Amino acid sequence: MERIQVQMEDPVFAPGVIKTAKVPIDVDPSGLSCEIEVFLGPNASIKTVTSGLKSFISTGLLQIVNAAITMPAVAGASYHVYIDLYVGGMYLAGYQATEDVIIPSGSIGPITWV
Amino acid sequence: MPQFNPGQSKNAVVPVTVQPSGLSCEIEVFLGPNDTTKVATSGLLPFTSTGSQQGIVAPITMPSASGTYHVFIDVYSEDFLIAAYQAIEDVVIAPVGVAEFAYVSSVRILAEFWDAYAGGPEIALGVDIKNIGTVAGEVTITGMYRLHFVYSSIDRWDTYTCSWSDYPDPSGGWFLLSPVYKDLWYQDPPSRHRVLQPGEVWTARWKVFDYRNSQYYPDELTWCVSEAGRTEDFVVKP
Image (tube, rainbow over all chains, first blue to last red; front, side):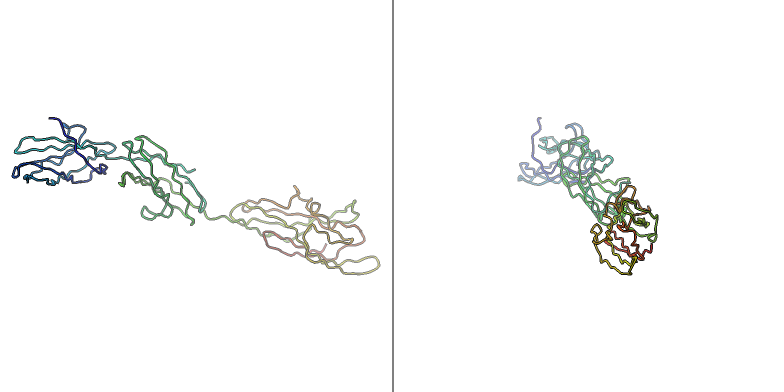
């Protein structure tokens, strides 16, 4: 199943910080037992960091599901953001954010004064 | 350890590597006793990361107070502090140097001459001037003079008094002083100026009395040397 592109903002984070992804989800009908997983990685099969499965009950309306995730410790790289949605234990849909999460790194060499 | 003058404008060239490329970044270089007290700062300077090392120029005006300051560098990306560095070497702000001169001898007669051309006696005077300041500076013998002449002639005694005058200005009459270039000709090299290093002593020398008539000879002379706005009188009795 091909992943669906989903928009995302504020993609730059410091390494190792805990951020909460607020994912707007609309699952119909209501009352279904659902799970969501947000993970970062170079591709959909390598989960560098993940929120783990977050359970929720569908409301049949747009609802916000929070997925706390610790950013990768390795800086100087960008990571794709994936969201997998499960309903009743079955994989329902896979999403990829339009923007990557960037964990910047910085280093400084010797200063010269002129 | 880099040493600068108070208030001096300098550029810190900082090799910065931020990855990945294309990020909106800012850098701040600041000086202070610690990383929370910014005595002098470049302010936040924006740049875009290239993913490889790039030289960022951070202009900074040195603190006005002398002392030793740590150098800190903060790099931000998207408002996140991604690198906080302290330079291994501090910056030293040197105190403002002052060249100060003092006479370290009285005026003394160095030599006496007989000026065949002028047909009269000349004396060479000298005084030792020392740089008691902390930096090199130029001392100038400005040549203000005041003369109180008491001379005897063959057939009469008389007294002439000369008021303050600028040095090259001849006093008129028959007791003309030599023009300034001649009076300072005795210097080697002839100059009214000399750059003195801290602690260095210079013997400023000049000639006086280019007599036009050998029958007149001064009994007393008050000579003044001035430099750097100060004057000092010397009484010379040749």
